[in-house]
Length: 589
Image (cartoon, rainbow, N blue to C red):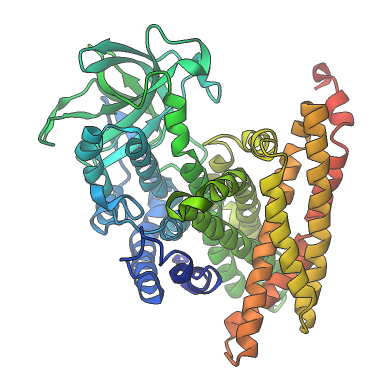
């Protein structure tokens, strides 16, 4: 069975060469003492790769075949998962980008993104554990009291304690305003009563404690989403000195039976079936959604990374099989259609990686960059997050499906492990806001709030790359530039159409929103591959004889020829969004 190997060469190229982590982030006060650069990048990627390939990847099939179970109010994890989580904590990975004041490593989000890719390529079901814990810790850091931060964050960043987010209820999915979970004030705390569903890594014994962040309503709360508050509910109560007290009234009822991510204990959680679970307010009363949205950008970026991670794992398995499987007297990798599928996977994976790593730097600049630039970078990352979450997860499904197809009939047989990537990644377009919600957010909120200003700035950067490509002497780069120019024109036209529709008839804009999200994803992916090709060409011209650079150019050309035309197809759908889609009676469906 194929063993996952982190694509360190491409990761390093992006972090050190394309993004220049030392020059871009290394001089910022938040990172100045960390020594950002090749030595640190190499050490982090090497250690992460060992953990991902040697510990997490062998557990991927184990988790699929021996899923987490729940009995008598406790979850039993897949064998090996608890030890792996302990190793992750011991290595400092749980708090890799967190505040050093509370035990974090204080590294850029860029490194956390690279680590997240490795965990999810190796074992997506396992990778959810650090992702949810870091999200919960981020919310506490942003909105908790000083006492809460001192009491809970160091243990969460060390991996001794885990964290979860408890939002969804039966009958209250994305519409959180109708939730039934209640919080009753009692002195310096609250008694929480209610039930939550789909709680990722909701219970386990891999850590000493689990810190649940729970959305609930106070007795006198306003109606709807304006009346939601956020509460910190530990599995075990925590004494003032940080030691653990008695068990809180919060228990898992069951684990969900899912299409994929079987190793992840997705729980139904009961709060307060007895006397009430003791919880502590985080932030202000009736401002719970605002608190949760603090961590949404990071969480949605990381879900996009899950799409990338699953695709990379599927690609490695598919290309290994294609080199070994002989048909017609040759390995099937020689067959044109198999080569088409593998190149589609490879080019889109490299585009996805370059896209999300680039915007991880934008997130770092929005949070820790020069004060005068933070608002502009925040607008940029706000715009890009729904595209990253939506496009990367949709493409992740396409590429994991192609991975099955490369295997032929053997891909449909579970023993090969190819189908698991497809089953595991399927959830990513659903949770943390479905991709339809991401598309609506992109168009109605992010594009509309500044009349497309941030988008026009991004498109101008693509135009600059087009100009550089067209002026280049190399024929490959000129062809990439011509294809990128056509895709840019399609996206500029669609942007104008969406903005006009948003002003005249929002329903029409929303009807074309998913196609617009996908169009943007393909364009920006192509842009980042074009940037990579330009840099690779310069390195070759300088005498660096490295076939990695030649591969980068060839991969970008394939993407330009075979993938970028999708922008025109999505543009055509956007242009007709006011047609049959909006006029089709719902009772005909």
